[in-house]
Image (cartoon, rainbow, N blue to C red; front, side, top):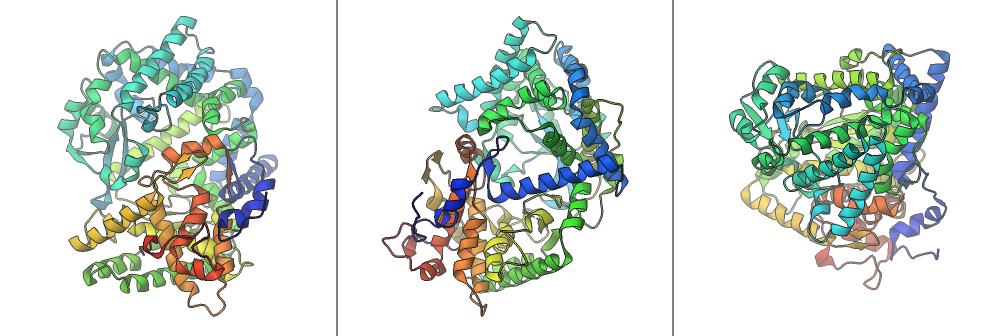
Amino acid sequence: MEKVRIQDDLFYYVNGEKLETLVIPDDKPTAGGFADLAKGVEETMISELNDMAESQKYPNEYLRNAVSFYRIAKDVKKRNKQGIKPALKSLNKIEKLKDVSALNRKLAEFTVDGTPLPFNIGVSEDMMDTTRHCLMLQGPSVILPDVTYYKEGMESQKEAILGMWSNTAKALLAYTPLSKEDQEQYVKDAISFDALIATLVKSSEEWSEYTKLYNPMPVNKVARLLKPLKFKKMLEKVFGYIPETIIVAEPRWLKGAKTIFNEETFTLYKHWAYINELIHAAPLLSEELRELGGSYRRALMGIAKCSTAEKAAYNLTSSFFSEPLGLYYGKKYFGEEAKQDVVEMVTDIIETYKNRIKANDFLSPSTKEKAVLKLSTMKVKMGYPDKVDPYYDRLLVDENASLYANYQKLSLARAQRELEKLNKPVDRSKWVMPGHMVNACYNPFSNDITFPAAILQAPFYSIHQTRSENLGGIGAVIGHEISHAFDNNGAKCDENGNLKNWWTKEDFKKFNAKTKAMIKQWDGIELPWGKVNGALVVSENIADNGGMACTLDIMSHMWNANYEEYFMNWARVWCIKAKPEYAKMLLSVDVHSPAYLRANMQPRNFEEWYQTFGVKRTDKMYITPKKRIKIW
């Protein structure tokens, strides 16, 4: 491609040549950036597991069980011989249900073992008092990526994607004992039940405002709205008592729950549950069923081929043994020198953030004081945890059992552990991401930031990169995560993670105006695969904006700051090539903006961008000063 000017397109100026040669693997939807680092970690950890399996030498019991599970998952010959048989017991359990009364007798069992139900419950931190847990309730998920696909004007896309799902369901049902006639009816009924769900559950945009999930409701009222299900009886069986209050994440769904599930719609539910259970089981069965089961997901993302049995086995193992694997990876591949350097960077960024808050021109002194307190009490989790959670002692693998049976056993242990938390205090030392994950996060309910070891590598970070490059990479990511404490959601939580208004009315009004400006700046931007929903991505854009503002501030006090290196590495970390189908789907479900825009939009808000590259009004990456946004 023709070389573009940096003033017109930072993303392509930095990444254009690489993108021309970058090849998306047949079994992935993206390549470059995060995806390449994740691919490298995957290859490293597969090699580690293979070496342990061959040598039969394990660093600890956790990894011995992980390797046992990995070995079973990778045993294609055994899985092919078993076919669909391991899953038939779970499928028959649903098939035997005759009516709502029969479901009520199984309701507690289904709640714990994960059998698809017309509701979902879980245990999480209580947003009003994050030292304790609460019970949360929400509706079931829809078949399509988001409920926006069901809206008027989306009919052709909706039908096309439902057709993909139907093909997957029909192909899998052919392996069950159901007659051909029943198979056709099950698919029709499942789609009919899905259409009912879609009228009431939340969209991705609604889910993105997570502080609005907190809707306490008396259990008696919830139970009335969920009739004919015997909800209170289920709670007593599962927890040993009936909680007085439940947090309802989707009040609209709950108010209309009777229209979705009742005696008349029971058969629709049953057939929907049967197919969902079958699709969920498919990756654990024969190779043929695993490939068929993933065909809908691959079609949605534009993925050409199913991943190898080895990769699938690793990812399945990682889903259960994430902390032991992450701890092993972190200790072996993340150096102490690098850890100290990044911790120093985090400390510098937090202190800079405090000074920026103090100098802020729209906050009053009382609000500034609370914001600085929040920064002062923010905890940092770097690389990997000190030890493995004792919960992993429960994950025992039976090498004589099938992959499906072991999966069910481990899933049950995980579910029981989560449900048990309702009566226990919140453990704030818990890591929400393992050391081998290429990601980072801010937890609003514990006011901490986590940076797994796997993301602390080039281009995000390297002790061999300049400080300017590292600030444009991991520095901006660190600033991004800190900024989530002050995005449109995080700003509603205090220094302890509790949902609490610590703003003056006037200050929050000004902040909301800036939030709306950020939405407007992004909303409707057209890309080849669709338009950006500014409201869906606003929290992440506020975080990107804050991360860049803070790190540019640090740059301004460095004697050897190189802004060219900073901005070019900022663009480099967003070097991603994606399948068009995947990119299109993300526009409707992902709270993050497309990588191309993350690279190109935020620099335009900062004067340093214009000074560094002499960007003028006639250049494509210019916006007028009055339209530039800087919040933190």
